[in-house]
Image (cartoon, rainbow, N blue to C red; front, top):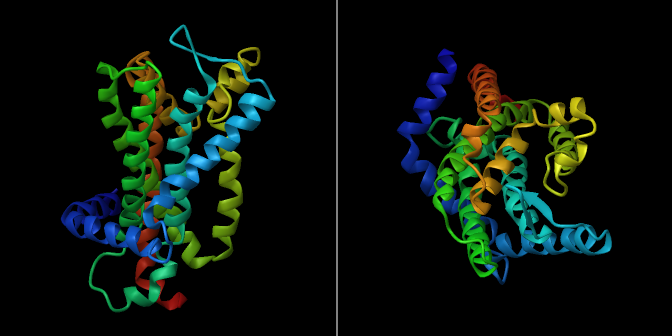
Length: 273
């Protein structure tokens, strides 16, 4: 627990530096592209259209019920896919954030724990842009801004907490065992299909035991929270209070584990150069 508080304090004390480095990270990543940072939005948009074409048109996916009302599949897909993109990119980039910057770390004087933070923060800007695009689309399609949008603040904060806790663990393991990053990349792709991004888990109602297991996925909790906000169906984190309690217990456990691992090994990270 002591390590967790130490890492959290480092994030608070160096928040200004995290913001500056995250902007530099985002610009540097796209500096050689003609369209620059626009690719951060173009790429997921293309993926959404591909999944909509395959699952929505070719497989004739019917509308999805949200709050007792049918919602067009493409709008339902957008509400979850933007969350998935933020999750996937942040975990992948966060897992290699430390070992890919070891040479820089030997010359810098700041806590290593802020490295996964600013990498995640660089993706956070993209996520905000995607949310803005989604909101515009929903307005055009008749799903107007409502009071439930306030829970987006909670959902964004909860997503960031989950990403940071996971990245502390994965960045430490990836620095020690480089093959772990490749394994992580392959494993994460599976989450696209078991987190309710491409198809509603309500289809498993005939198998309640399986549905209950899949709902334990923290990413499912976040995706449903975003969709509840966009479509104005419910205060998801309140009506599903049992999942909310479970979600934060998972984050606390992951943060404690990740912080302990990070603090224990970070003095030896340079040795892995």
